[in-house]
Image (cartoon, rainbow over all chains, first blue to last red; front, side, top):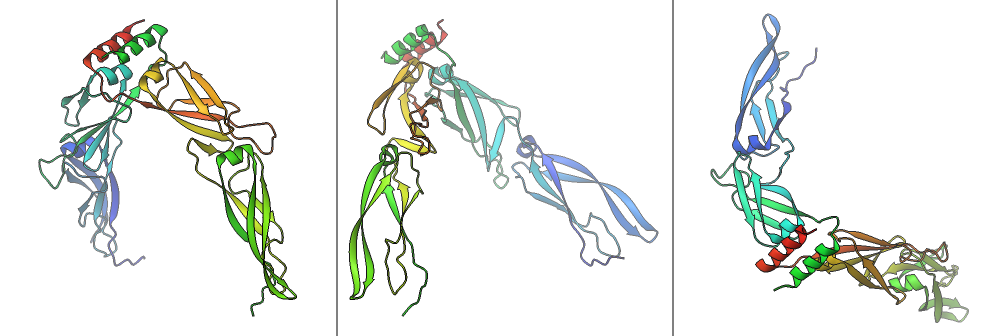
Length: 185
Length: 185
């Protein structure tokens, strides 16, 4: 038979949501492993519990030592889970920051707008903006980003990027009114 | 001494303007070359005339055969000019098209605007735009691009890209007027 003196580690991707990484969570993973026993090869099932701490990043490795297959007299290898972050419908993570793309209409961009954002821990925050919002305008909301795993209690920022949707068409009447308004004091 | 049986060509960059490439032009280049004669080495000066045809592109090579140095019994090499396009203050060339970036104000973008563009042959063209101009809006003016050297009389397009400059600040009075105008029929 084969002779490998080194135990083999097995890496498995563990896809988690941004909510999981924000709030922290526990994942239970059922593994099946082969164990050589005096009475022959046995398949064992086992539940491994992975504690995901708030702020962990994609690529983080969680190692369960000697939980892999144990075959042919070689010590059992490790099982390693590698965190993968599933795409999120509202946020993109950039380091410790969260980036949120808001699309607003031109009247909202010019006349003032209060943005409502549902956070990853299910709060609804209101972000009032009184500045004129030009395309590409960024609004930084300090402390509403991802938790920073090495600084308990600290969080990155929420960065809101604005897309401004122009009307497809304006009537002559609307154009005249807009021109009057731009030219008024 | 050295023995090279192959004549050496000399490549020289020839920087020209976009106007030169649009209109065509003649460039006179003074070269100095070494010639071996029965009475020894002679330095010669010569004027080479390069005819640049409308629509030529950067990288075009113009070769003057046997106008290079002639040394040690080896036939004279060629002199090769390679067209390089100098950056232009108004236009970027993209193949046969010219790209023009226009920065206009938000009132101009919304209420209608006639753009004035000075062409590479010193005409002033007017481009009336009645559509709402959103950021990134493109206006294509057919036939106002670069001449196409292989199709005499044909030209590419002029592509106008719009940047829309938002006002930094709007008064409450202006905001109210804008809102009224957007909401009017």
